[in-house]
Image 1: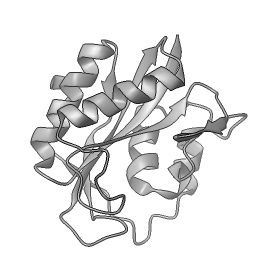
Image 2: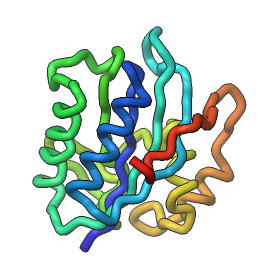
Image 3: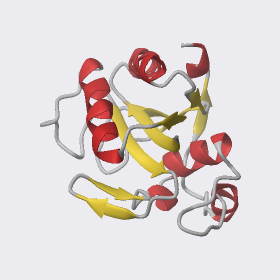
Image 4: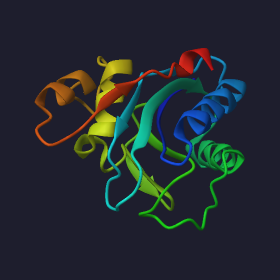
Length: 165
């Protein structure tokens, strides 16, 4: 069993889509836990604010099987793979960490390259798994979050409990 952490984000009907994704993740990964949901401005383009959270769960799926499973959940939530990279999203699921795996293959890099630079990924992950070691040998996610320069980075909690979805 490997512990995986996935960022969840939406800025098109975000409350409903986040709940839909949480429900789909729970069906596939019964032990899934979620951080709080946060609102933050769109990054890289002008658009509605995003809702973001992080999910953590155990899985026996290898990475090459987990990614298509996440893509299926995105599709269930209305995302088309051809949607523009920097544009509004019905659903975006990004694999942040997969155990202590370090490496890349077509379609992914682990740990996720921008994890330590994106408030909407690192903040919720630090809330969910502060003692998790950033692969391969640290520091912890909580320590990375303590060092994160928060000036100019908006991360506003919203009343949406994905653990109840």
